[in-house]
Image (cartoon, rainbow, N blue to C red):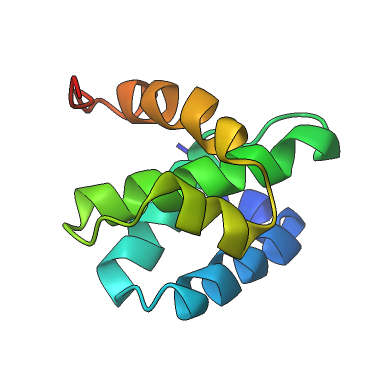
Length: 102
């Protein structure tokens, strides 16, 4: 769970998620889930935040049924595909979801 303070402190990252979601033409549910996942997993260091934000967006799109490729999400978030690949499953597991096995 996260606080309102977390949302305020991470507003630049939430804005980046929104902009990438616009580029990916994602709906409001995917955006909302991505923001919730990100805020629940915010790392301590700024260096890791872009990867977690991208993986959260990818996972949020999956949950909302608006799947996009890891490459497209990575490009929209300006991170490597490997960053998305390494982080999306642990984010889902921490949130209580069982990631697909594919």
